[in-house]
Structures are given as C-alpha cells and as structure tokens.
Length: 193
Image 1 (cartoon, one colour):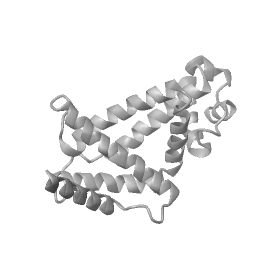
Image 2 (image 1 turned 90 degrees about the vertical axis):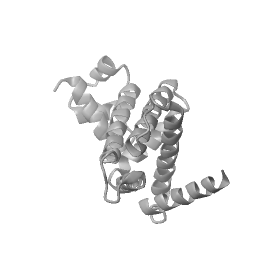
Image 3 (image 1 turned 135 degrees about the vertical axis):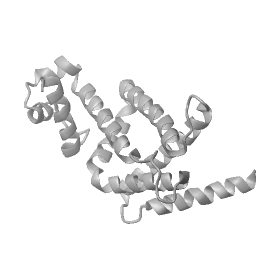
Image 4 (image 1 turned 30 degrees about the horizontal axis):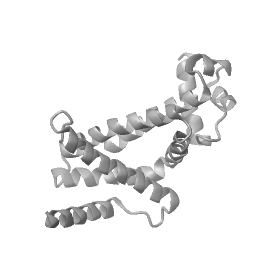
C-alpha cells in the first residue's frame, strides 16, 4: 500500500476516533505511518484529504444501509424494503455513531468551504436517485423528477433521523415508527387529492 492509500486509511481512522474538526495533519500522518508532507503532495491539504475520506466513508455507509433494499423481503413490496432499510439506518445510528458525528461536523464546514459544499451536494444528488431506484424501483432515466423527489424525501428523513439519534437516542424513533409515520402521511396526502 502506497502513501496515498495509507493516508486515506489513516484519515478514515482519525475521523472515527477524533472527528472532523479535531483531526490534525500530524494525527493523520501518525495514523497512516506516513511522512507529514505526503498529505499535501497527494491531496493538496489536510481538508481535501479529510473531505475525500469522509465522502468515501459516507458512500460505504450508504451502501451498507441500502444493502438488501433491492432484494425481496418477507412481506415483499416497497413498504417492506423501506422498513428494512430504516431498520439498518437505525442500527447504524449506534454502531456508526463516530462517523455520523464526523459527518455532522463536515456539514457545518460546508458553510465556509465551497469545495466541501460542492462535494457534499454531488454526493447527495447521487444518493437521491440511488434511494429511489433501490427502494421503489424508480429509475432516474425514466422519471427523473419523481426519482429525485422520492430520493429527496428519504434523504431528508435520514438527516432528521440521524440528528434525533445523535441528540436524544433514548427517544429517537424506531424503524417501525418511521414506517408507520410515513404510511399515515401517505394516507393523509392521498385522501386530500
């Protein structure tokens, strides 16, 4: 493994152990067992390396919570796939808490960094269409507007659920509560049309 890969692995470890805001270049170099100067050589800056590590880690997290979403679930149908995905999200709120805290820190950084904001915006856009396809079988190429809308709702729910679990895990909603709430909202919207 070369210095570039070592730095990526070290940055991911630092994100988990120290968080986005508290990680220094020296922390990353030590975790990567690489010379300090290799950060700038390979990534341009500590911030760019941390951004790349965070985005890669969030992509891995997204894949983990979406895994199985396209597969049939007992009870099949979109409702079962959605509830199964929400169960994985809720479980990850405990198992992946350091990553989720680091991502919240990175979101705060986006206000002051156009580069971070752009990278996160692109990741969000990719996730929208992926969620719509995996959970509801809506292909962006077929119906881009609907796919984007459905994926956006899931993204908003993931962000809100994560904030609730980070702040108040004792009273944060379960996967079943999220699914029940979504069903009731859908029923109310349907009766209004």
